Image (cartoon, rainbow, N blue to C red):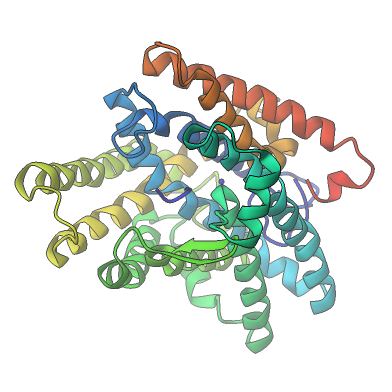
Length: 394
């Protein structure tokens, strides 16, 4: 499982550009993705992929395969969009300070509080008499010290700092990608081709070498080994798109992408169905081999990057096409989206813990968990943001 995603322009996924005119489409896309994260964590206990509850429903496998295959890559793409202008406008020490405040501080706090609280719910299933104090001390001194979904935060910080160094090398490093973004105004398929070629090159060899389950781990710092370069590719392509002439490129509301939105839905469904075909072959023909044959991993990895690139453009196409000025639910949630992402995990896991012993259908448990996680995470974030200074972090 990959997971277990409004502030400064420095590249926070939930931040929107501080400009006279907000980009509602991107704001809504970011907030939508945050809800997708919550949905992913609400349903995964009731799936074949992460079957930790007595009940399950096959429909949730359809959801989890899709979300796991694209949403973190899309988060990194959106995170990169406003990075280059932010770096250009700020002195290096100011950029570093802002990133440490916005990303480093929340990660540190969450690693010592939110994440142990979340995984304590899982630990109690195996040892009902375990105290939280004993569990917390073992987590931070002996380990394992899982990061849950907040791995995204420290990896994004590392990407931001890498981008800052690359900018000091040359501010023109992103020019080729930006030119292809501009071509994407009329020819979205050209941009899609760039995306899938680059991500295939960086992802498939890493998948063959590391496999799909290996994570780099050092205390709470963890990241999926096969996907780190995939995520950086999405991030840096996002940086390239946002470097210049943003409104005249692939993400222009007046371009061809929103007009072709249904074509991109079809382009998304094809590799998604092929991924399920590969899963069928793995389970029913190959007998779930471990390790998987390289030919299988290469084909599956290729279909994954095709799906990920296509659904990225499909989702953005629909949000770019949306003309409603709002405010709708996504608009109202937007300012709290980053905080919701940070605090939701223990809420989700403790709700699942509470529902575990009830003989309810999986769809009832998951729906209850999702709705309550959204409401409680949103309410908690809204309350935390009222603390003086907290809005600069959350």
